[in-house]
Length: 339
Image (tube, rainbow, N blue to C red):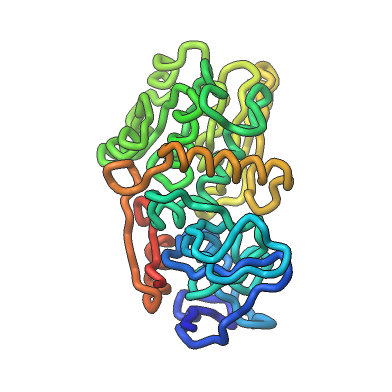
């Protein structure tokens, strides 16, 4: 089978396309024939590493993907060959990601994809949607698992509403009943955030961002999904409602530290919640998978420019270009056609 892999960390030129033996599932495992692989920032960052380093075994990149089950191991009862599925965390602490024709994963990492829902949607879930779900449920008064009506009466601020996580956060929050404000950096990105379902959009490059958000949410926002706390911590504290949560899921390029406004945070009893989807508690991760699956079945997580998430495609042999596109800030979702 064809697979892209790397044997040492570094720039995208460490990725090579080659042939590998077909894997077979063991007990409790499922083999998926990948049709579409999704690329996230975490994929190129893991491949690049902290510097050049030899790996103990070849690594196939990419956490997310979608395809068809074609073989199951002993004890697997919830899936069978022919089922359309999406997968999550494929390459986390494993050598086999989704940039290959066949991948074997534990059964709980393989989730049914409803008929009529494209593989493009399936490959765009995983990291972005599960991260967004955790960010939205870290709020003290939110349920542990989103559902229609579960965020009724709440206001959500999505910082960076045109990104993949921001897009999923808008869609999930709207599905759950929240009023959503998104910040963006351009008119074009504003249109994408609106297409995703944001009720209000604020361009953070314009002056008086806090005033604009405050006018839209006079009592403050309850949940902030934060992509750049280094730049936005002061703003977040200013626009947050009492007992709000600021869920931080990314660090700013070139920055690994954030200065928090302590006294304003104390006065409002704010919660600063950091989110890394890989290490979310198992029960919370399982709840996220269930909720995202329900949202997909309800048609709440579509992709494509008309839904606020433009798609950029590459063939498997151009996986390096796909990684570079994400690293260079491609707007929307970068996908790799594997099958």
